[in-house]
Image (tube, rainbow, N blue to C red; front, side):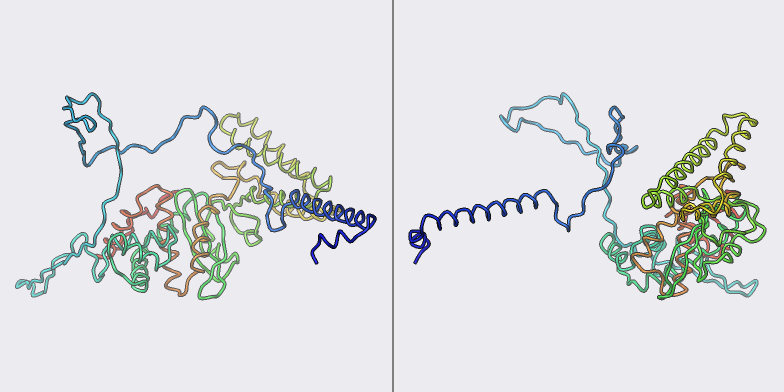
Length: 450
């Protein structure tokens, strides 16, 4: 029996009840459907990002395009003798359309055999060998071009060994195993280690050094990668310790410059002038302000932000102000900072920050006392970022030889990048010279002031 016959057998009152029940069910389904349209599903993360300005350049800004090549290696002329539509003969061209295109030449492996002749001197009765060629790397079956390029791909572009071997094979047809490449880079770092020592000497002679550290792994064990950098040089070392002994061993007790660090406790009571990173301070205060919405903390937060802003502005206006005016404003800022110190706040966040100011307030305004001191540690954070990428892809090092290779080559590459020098040509020249017996450093002056 179908639904139609069932309904025909119902009375009028029963049919009315069925209709009312169906209307209620329809209304409930419509309400459920409309609520689903208004509220997004739980698995979709809402876009809470606030854009302070529209992306891109401002209206009226001059466009920036790729710079045209300064020289042309080949010119190809394209001409017509007749019209492609009516086949009528054409005369001289009325206009020339120029298009400059840059491309790369497919590489190939170049195999070179070096033959050094050996002689017998009848006068001094000694065997004499001809010198090495200027492009020859003794006892190496991988040439300097491939080896230096592999080092750049590994320690600048953070590619794993297997990816590097694929790149060399696909672009140039050079077949080399990941293990052979790792051993070759270890030997490369041994010959260039003298250049890393020169970087450390120059950093110790500089007036400022930025310091930062990040976690590292050596054969599955926890270590720390330390960065000691300035505007021209970068020196890295990996140690098991995260204590102040690493800083003292690196800079020595005779260092008379200023160190710029975050608020990590090991940097306190070091025998050096100190400047704390105010960006770290503002970042932490901002994060706390999102959780602590009390009126007292928000007022305290605004005072600190205004104080840092005024201090940075005074630092930027230093060269335009008279000495007496500058000193008067500097003393005023120190008094404002002193008033923010203290303990015994009922608010636990204010009490913690007040204790920090009481401990570090003498190290927070060093950049106003001396010239050439930055008020943040952004340089060290920026130069430690490549190591973080490397760590996320390779999980650190497996051996002490790999550790020494990493610190040596990254120190050289980052220092050359800071000085805007050609990494490939610089490392190649130094490597060949050291491999042929040169013992003096070539890349960086031993007594350079940074």
